[in-house]
Image (spheres, rainbow, N blue to C red):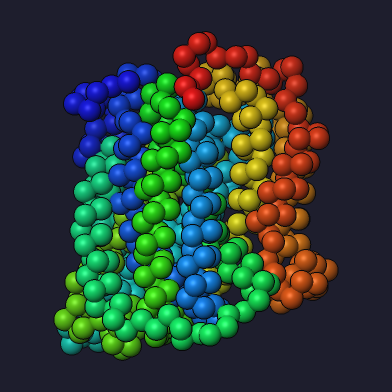
Length: 487
């Protein structure tokens, strides 16, 4: 393993455009260490969005104690992101490229399409929030926000957002690590202004178990499970012999701990005001609800915008490499530019169409339908293969590839398990849509309890275990000693 002072190689240097895409990262370029994952994830996890999510939990009617329980339980799901970061060091490539093993060369493209749509959707949501924060800052400066100015906000935000993902992995790691201290300081100041107003007994008796399960699904979906498809995009820069326990531990510390603290602070504020979560523009609510002193609103919003850019950088980087997995013959940085243009167009449309905003939020709620079963299949396949891949074969798309699949380049057993898991996830979903009771049968018969994550994962894993066990042609041979990762 390289030492802390080892030089960063030419293909992945901070503040230079990274040349790697979904290709296998050679050993000479594996400059990162497991604790670098902490800096990357922590810089994106001290996030104003999670503060708002904490406030939102109080709109369910939970007591403060129930909200804290949900936050802790829900954020334990970041252990899953750690597990979904263990395949990168050995394979040296991205999550959606590794996905060729369970789903086949072309079957993986279908899952990559789901992932690309998900990443672009969250990028657009983040940019919308940046524009909303910019609107509040403009109003505080005494100017009205008309249509031309809104478009200008979007264009400027997109141009700024492009920088980190365009430059690539080493730049993202360096910048996000540097943002940890100022982000932490912001929330410490915010806590100082708000905790004296907290009334933890404002709700004497919270809702029952059905609503508790809905709150748990909400928390898990917006925390760990929703990031599992990104994990290996960043862990692939670790050396092959990186300790698995260290990888999981540093990812968990960099994600769960910051988000638990920020969400609990949000729920504490939610004991005396929920307008932040219910206002059309959550940033305007900071000023109107007197949560913080007026003089603190501007620095709060400025840092909030930086935070949104930080977390969007991870989405945009992953959407770029996912676009390559779909088969688009472009370089990684070109894919990032393409995704940025698409997100720009969607954001311009969204800021002038409130119904699109609502649709986008609903979209973010239900993408978990595909992620839960996918994660179960992905990890189950990895375990069945002895936690090892033939890294060179993952890069091949021809019929001679070990991971090509059956007819059409698809492993139909994995696809069947994915469809079964998605159906089971939908049956357990407590949906905001007007759906017939037979389509969401479990909540309809349990008072609205949401089991979508658990049913999707369990059914997909069970089906894959029965029909998807890797056969001779695509079973990975044991990796050479010292190459598969030390326990």
